[in-house]
Amino acid sequence: MNTYKRAARNPGKVKIGTKMKISILLILTQLSICFAQQKKSDFVIGEKISIESKVLNERKTIVVIPPYNYKDRPDEKFPVVYVLDPGNNLFATFGIVNYYSDMLKIMPRMIIVGIVSNDREKDYLPTPSKEQPTGGGADKFLRFINSELVTLIDSTYPANSERCIIGHSAGGLFAIYALVNQPELFDSFICIDPSLWYDNQSCVREMPEFLKNNKKIKKSIFISLSNEKEMGVFPFIEVLEKYAPEGINWDYIHYKNETHNSLGFKSICAGFEMIYKDWKTNENAK
Image (cartoon, rainbow, N blue to C red; front, side, top):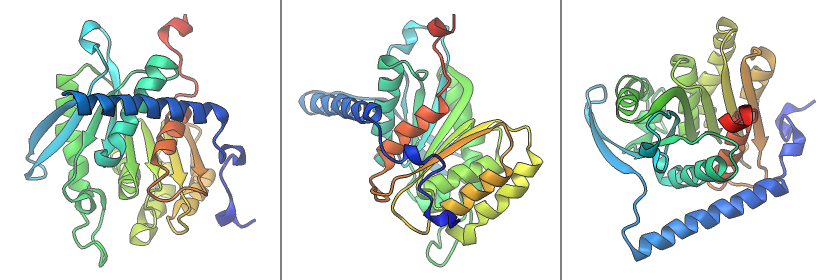
């Protein structure tokens, strides 16, 4: 069987169902209302914060969007989702999280943190290359998130210990890099068309040993693939199929009709649906 021609782990998931189509339309409507308000008034979502990072030796900008009226519920704590490339994915994440949590109640309300990168190749790529000579700062960027950013968020906002990361392209590669190098940092990973081809698939090659040495690990990993042919996703899926322990909850969808730039919104929807498939509100759990 030629695994490079497989549509997905579950072929039935390649087509977007009616429920997701409706959800996407409703979320887009919600976002359009937000943007309409922004044009007419000073509609502001989130807080822009500047951090002087000692690890990176530079000033970093983050955008934090806490749950609406969270201060009215002082005893409640929330998971945190860290969004790379927030210029592309922050508003999509905001709309999806709010609609899925407040309207559909199929996932918890979350604190959303967008991390702005002035040089995403430097921040996201583990090693430099001829094509990306500024790459190689992923280790420092990961230490910045772990030792400085998470500490700031946890001390400033009502965050619980659950963390998710969303990364697209090189950001998706960084998410997998974070899993291997700081496995305790994030609980779930949404990797959108991750650049797993980079550096001769070094992250893919490291995964078998990592999974063999962490058989009790519990994580959720969602991976999407567009119509790009050489992203290194299928070799990564084969590694998960062969070595992933029982505690790794994972899935992927091959969006054959989407481009590298168009599949983000659908991927975030599907990723959260997979991660919180068995989630129940406190009311439903009683």
